[in-house]
Image (tube, rainbow, N blue to C red; front, side):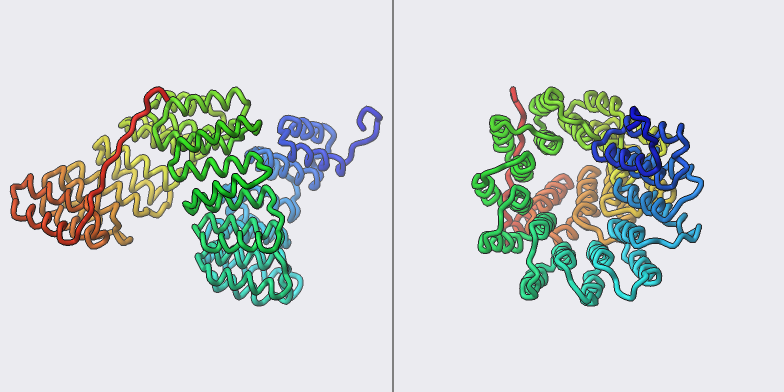
Amino acid sequence: MRDNGVQVDSFTVPTVLKACSLLQLTQLGKEIHGFAVKNGLDCDVFVSNALIKMYAECGCMVSARLVFDEMSSRDVVSWSTMIGSYHKSRLFDEALNVVREMRFWRVRPSEVAMISMVGLFADIGDVEVGKAMHACVIRNIMSEKLGVAMATTLIDMYAKCGDIGSAKRVFDGLDERSVVSWTAMIAGCIRCNKFTESSRLFVEMLGENVFPTEVTIRSLIIECGFVGGLGLGKFLHAYILRNGFDMSSAVGTALVDMYGKCGEIRSARALFDSMKSKDVMTWSAMISAYAQARCSDKAFELFIRMRGSQVSPNEVTIVVLLSLCAETGALDMGKWIHTYAEKQGVEADVILETALVDMYAKCGDINGAYRLFSEAKGRDICMWNAMMAGYGMHGHCKEALELFADMERLGVKPNNITFIGLLNACSHAGLVAEGKKLFEKMVHDFGLVPKIEHYGCMVDLLGRAGLLDEAHEMIKSMPLRPNTIVWGALLAASKLQKNPNIAEVAARELLEMEPQSRGYNVLMSNIYAEADRWNDVARVRRDMKDIRVGREPGLSSVEVNG
């Protein structure tokens, strides 16, 4: 077009930018941006919006934000594109800040913008903010009735926030229910473990002559897999078979994945073997099912069969296998998979790089993990967490804390998992003061609410350092109900410090929660024995015999020549 001397205008550039985003051609997108600037087209709001979208789709959120900030005038599409882009990238805090800015400048949101905002609040999971957004929708909607797209998004938002009652009220208020609305409502019930209600709604939908599409069936099966709804998953599988529903590769893969996540490995494999066409996702789903069941031999055997079937693995397949290697400590196999992925040209995105760092760290090669970490171009919080947890696991607390300081300097915001790794590292290194400081920092500097795992780490940290009374006081002052992790940490510390009195308190709580657990009884018996309280030893062993506590055999494994 340019070679022929035809003038490129503000309608042409966005079309080319859309092509760049669909093909992930970041460099070419930047060149088109340069062309737009040279020709004065970047001042057009239509072009700027397309640039934001292109950069966001290519994963360059910093560039997308720069374009947004430099716009001389923005329309409602600019705001909704920025909010939607941050949301899609799971940068929820940044998305919320744009929403606040939009309100500050009194920009009236369009329906598309409101759908983006409702979707954002759904993923944040804050039902109160979600309700406020619902009120905003009602105030700003042009017609008296909600459209299907908006209603569906609201139903999804309430379901994700666990408020299925409000989701049902929105659904019941619809004059006309499409298959999309039914799907959102049924999926919401599944997500909230309302399996009976889900089945009833599915039957009711059929009774109103609304029939599920392939997308409906697939999305409901996926939801069943997430929450372990095996019964409903089988019901949907039966519906497919009874009604001659086309078992496409996508639906078959969803069923294999669902059975795998629900622990039904035989059903998953039987379905997998019966499928005529299997794409890379089908193979990956079956390998993942074996990995979740810790059937490492079968997972790798299937991977070899996959290669023999001329199906090339993708990053999902490789991540699953690397995670399995990490769990089983199979370093040689992990290294082989790493080399294989590089030779096959599998795209090393941040998820794959994080899986590699995690595998090397968990399999004992902490130097290899750090080498990959330092070479990674883009690091998200998950990769930082994997590296810090690896250092903690290897007893390198100093390096973990230095890494945390680097992360802060680079402006990467930590999350709850970050502090679990750091507190564990401090616990193993006996750094009580540093651990306490981190706990305070987590709450006051970053506004994170401590979870039960953080309290477990703190109890372990204090207990290992001999501060058993302080650890016990922390448990008593917790705003959460202590679980077996917390009391177990106190019991283990009591054994280490040879303190039978506090051990008795912890053991009593643990045995109330898990009366059949042999471990706590044996630990208590050993503590009494070390304190020469032989009558108590005899009592514990007699109690174990009376309630017939079974023996739990231990198991260890090492990898030899793969």
